Length: 283
Image 1 (tube, rainbow, N blue to C red):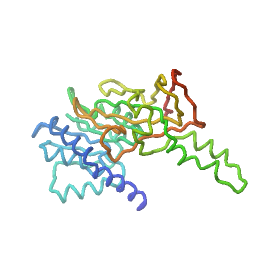
Image 2: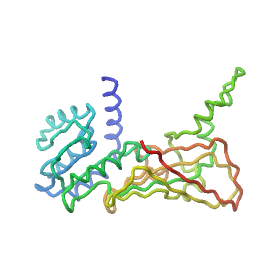
Image 3: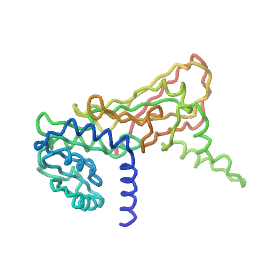
């Protein structure tokens, strides 16, 4: 149990050290919170940071839904900071029956891969918490993809051909290359420095969204290159005009990008078309 709590608090440490993330959510809450009126549902609340901001900005009540033990730390933090209008529910939000209705639903359950913490399922379920005309944060998420034309990351991870000792690790190589990896990807790793990135998925929480995502992307090769894989990142529109992005071209956050390696690099010639299809498997 101690090890699990350490892993959770380590993540919270990264989140709270991310000034870009924190300031973006603070600016959003300044806009949407109505002093003395707003009721907030904080889905996946962690230490309670976002609800604490909402409380300081004048929210009437905040209901914090967090199934991990870090919620206990949140309660102690609220006490230490003399915040008395936060109510802690140590359950996953989907387990809650007849929840208090909220003016604002906020869920910062984004990962390096946007959907790894099941943000779609959480928000779709928590819409039952929302009062008519209420606000959901984030409002939209876009997922981007771009070809990786630098060998740097592929060479770092593809150790299997050089193990030596007269051993064949081809089976392990195939398994490893049919996977996704978290990497800090740089503009110089990408075709055209990332300027040719394509949106392959759009999520709009004003509509009903499905958990399984699929999309496609296409590029015309402008000059001869070798393609080693694909980079994936996201942009979250919190409310109109305020975004968080994990793009390699954007200011760095605590999140990194996703690298999808090819099982073998592709030599692409100028004028050729590269097309990919993507589908996320359901849980």
